Length: 486
Ligand SMILES: [Zn+2]
Figure 1 (cartoon, rainbow, N blue to C red):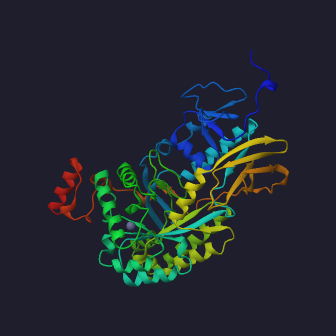
Figure 2 (cartoon, rainbow, N blue to C red):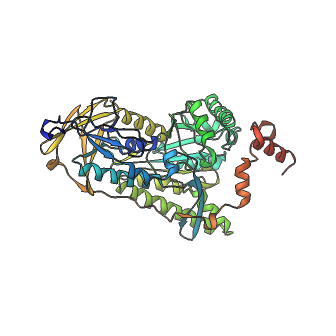
Figure 3 (cartoon, helix red, strand yellow):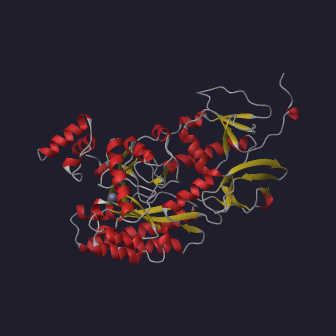
């Protein structure tokens, strides 16, 4: 006989317990900041999320089972598996068609859809959505600019340093060692700022062995130049197992590849302790390339730079308004160094926003790890709830976001015990950022069979022939073709 509800213990509303769920789902819960715990790892709580396709758990007394199997059916397989799923993507900016090889799916949109459906399930079952904010209190978004220093040009380098003056703390520098091999002294100008590696040779290889060699060499080169790099970003933004495993073995703190994710909150890919901090994949270089494809002169190139600056500023305001983060990226050589006002305008626009955290990628990684260590327990109270917090970091203030329907409110946790009364919260409409430009698949950005063959062979000419280390048929074919001068 089922005991009456009155006899059931009243369990905490949060964290939710989770059964056997895919890693990507747990990462989405973490990104959202919804407290969760693995079933059996701590005393039971009110709601157990489970997947009816994989198991049939027994609820504890006072616990409710929420089957999220149907929600998982709607998730793209590539996202669930953190697989290399990049493909040509196209943005339309003014008259220019910009092409880039990016992740097939907009992971941010996938996550937000999943979270909305999960919240509805929870609310219908009498639960609450109280999540740790993605930003340290009192911020409501963050902004940073990532610079990929592919090669050194003195004038461009100097122009970029002038453009970031006063906002250096929001700029991340990733340096390619080969491109700066004759200009290591110039890097002294970056002392005290966040400097990471962009590889030794400017290529992301298919094999673990080659990436391991290339990234380690790039890191050691930076160390000899007096820097202490903790992050690496892969040349061309590519991401696959050969890169992920090399980053893991090197103990890299964070990485950032738009072939895995773009415009998204940070997350740990499956099996990796290397934090992925996604960027926006549209850069000035893409706009200049698009203009050059049409044989544009200097005036048109100026126009392309102007349109990129407008795109950046629009995006900065839109993301901030929606409470979402943004990391832009670009290259000093021949691009931002030539049109430095694009960089300056972006930094000035973000810095002028109230509540926008200006931070570089290492700082964001440090924050994200501290945030992930916070443990919350939420108990229901008449007209509100009681939040117990453990492991609050000393360095950052923790805020929470309460979501209900299409509204949200913020609460700052000032101690390990916080009483929340629903009628004292200031709810505001929840805004969502829409993608800027038009994301289109295929069209003029479609890859030719030559491009596919090159990708298959891991084709490139930046690595000297004598240093090619790839094994198997791919390595042999690449070396042979390079030797005969293909
Ligand atoms: Zn690069």
